[in-house]
Length: 516
Image (tube, rainbow, N blue to C red; front, side, top):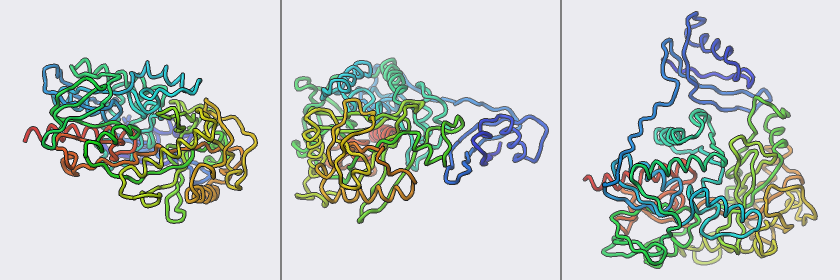
């Protein structure tokens, strides 16, 4: 078996006869016998007008398996020792799956609802603008990842861990394409049934998941958590606690601080979410090719250094929708997602500016200086847009030219938009960098700057503005021996894959410690 990589046109990449002939030629030079091959990786190179598809195959003269070989050993853990997990996002769910593999009983407490009930609250949020503070785009089964497109690209160096997460997702119902695409995604429409399948497996194996069960207090003894309080009245004794609460659980940061458990301010990013038509982005990225059946909806990745700070695109959603992601009624927050086919007429992306504690007014050593700034911006957006879930918006060229927009093209943001100048929302050091960043992006993507593009504010939940410090080797909190803060909420991950990996690593750290 050998590995063969080559480039071809989008049309050739869809032609099985061309692929077979090309692989035979590359294999040994025009052999006559049948060859067997599996596509391992696929990516698009659209930097030049002649767009190419990069393909990587495993090729053999002998037949071999063409399907994923799942080797997960999910044990029955009904009578096993328990490990408690707070949060049923990617980190919490994959920590639970890892517990099943290692013979421990996971018990998850999730403040929100299961995906079916959660969708009803999202419908109310989109149609009526009412936020359920415990069940929204950030809180509930699957966490924020359920309704943020299911992007699975990660810069993690541990490719083996990445492959295992991808294989688990396929096992629970994701399309096998995620195993070969360079920038795979599941799609918000498909994630709920995958998450449901994960939950059913956890329960079938003897684990527990408790919805509408919110962590409200901790009891500490000798730098150890002896019990947790759920919903203000239920006390539960624990041995080890994985904290996988996500980047928006501000009450958890505040709880830890009250208990004198160290938390720190953490750099994050804030800005806007821009929406173009997908047709325009396709035209720019594919050099004029439109409605091409051989190419997926185009995406982009933009970055610039402006006045010593990074300005960059974040969570780009081809064929997507901008969603209201507030977790309280008196704030406005945006995020983006796409269905699996990425077939909506709009393209959106966060465009954000890097922020450090020292950039803000106040004590840079205050653990909540970044969180308080984030909250201030979100509440200001709520005030300026009409004290509802409408989003402050401005046409892109109007923003660059410092003009208030008098009308708008249609937006995918369902609660509606309100004309607000970004200068009224953000401090000067942010809007100045955003303006200059957009101008730089326009140089890289001819046509990107147009008054048909609309920016929506704020894109503020890019990552946690608070770090829960832990030991680099043991993954334990630096003070509390049985507390394992992990993933996005603790400041150690940035997306579904990295969060899932961190959750599994935390579970392994607990088990390995107990086996010593």
